[in-house]
Length: 420
Image (cartoon, rainbow, N blue to C red):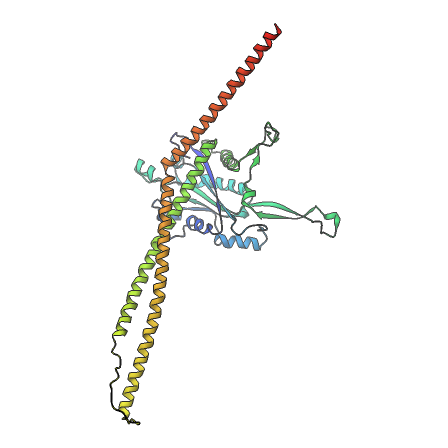
């Protein structure tokens, strides 16, 4: 992450995606949208984006096909579970600018993709891997007076772990009970990213004072794996993203800000689209209302009182004229009834659309509020609070150390006095 200290740091983030959310990630990664609210995306450069692995279909269809082919298993997976993951590999824009830009970034992220294959557990579980080269770094571009682009890599994958299925006690061959029946690649985000035991220099698990294994958080392991892979590939002028709970928490919060901004952009597009649909329907309703008024304006046949005998004799021309008028009147009535039904249906649709627009507008306001809270100033304030807590903890530890020191000193003094 760029911190203004001239040091280039590696960063990789892991997003968890449900089946409902992965479609938006696909639209962004594969540049499937017709237009973008994000003004930093330059469509003319989209053709320069580099796919290290191209999707063969949409992400959900690829997932379903892998299940059908027996490559992965959804055994025990809940319907609303996180079925997909997205790794976003990143280094600050200045790093690539200083090394020549596009060609250097392409080679760098080719090596990062190899690291992703190892992190995920196999290329077969990666659905798409694309380096974006079409997002402009506005701040650097304005500062340098030339276009500077922010290169980064999106890797969408399926989180799997190997699970061994054992023969149960119901097996007829009792010698097989408890042995491995089959091994499956189970889709599980939680198991894929559970905490790992910390190892010492001899490869043995580190233990706490209580004899329990010391665990390393999966986020920290992920940062180490990416950094180590890039250093091994020869990129020795990058440093690992800073360690420490406050710095890592800040990075995660920044990632949440980006996701909320993306969500806000989508809400803005949806609100505009619904408003456009509502306006279109209102125009249709106006046309229907005009037709209805025109139908109602048609002169209806008014009965005139005439003395009639028990038998009425009509000329043929008079009978035909009356029949034609009656048919015309019936047709007008039927048309008016049909138009009324169309008008009622249209009014219902416009009411639903207006309600949806109102709902989206409220949600948009809420996300604007969230984005304001997660602004740079808010993040700095949150980070300062965390640092304050860290300082207070250090002060408590220091006081405890002093108390222990003076306690031991008094004990030794008392012991010498008694011995005399």
